[in-house]
Image 1 (cartoon, one colour):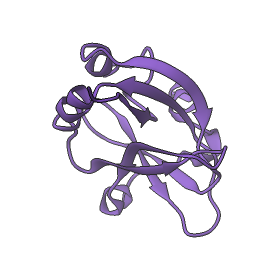
Image 2 (cartoon, helix red, strand yellow; image 1 turned 60 degrees about the vertical axis):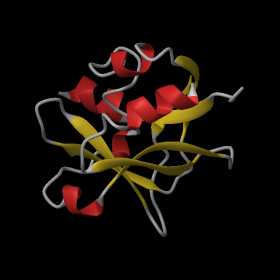
Image 3 (spheres, one colour; image 1 turned 180 degrees about the vertical axis):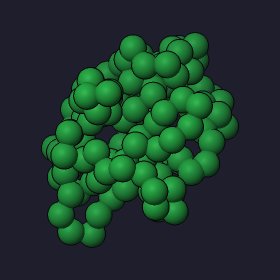
Length: 129
């Protein structure tokens, strides 16, 4: 029997956001809300469904709000196939110094994207729109 795994989301997959159903349809359950370590920058990416792009920094950065979801290994595999470029899955550093697999963004995508890191997360950005 395989154990479930965790995945961190920072934008359109958060609870109440338009792509959250992609997690819940696969039986994922919310584990907790927390923050990244203060080494990330967040950008608002354009698209049919607006999404953020999370980029880890060598120095500096911000703590960004995220949710950690538990999902089966099979569900994780199905979920990952739905992720369009420039987003992908990588290892995120959490404020408590643990790591979790979660959304990251390829750096080319932020060339013309506004930085929203100072707001602390996607929900705060949406609230300002």
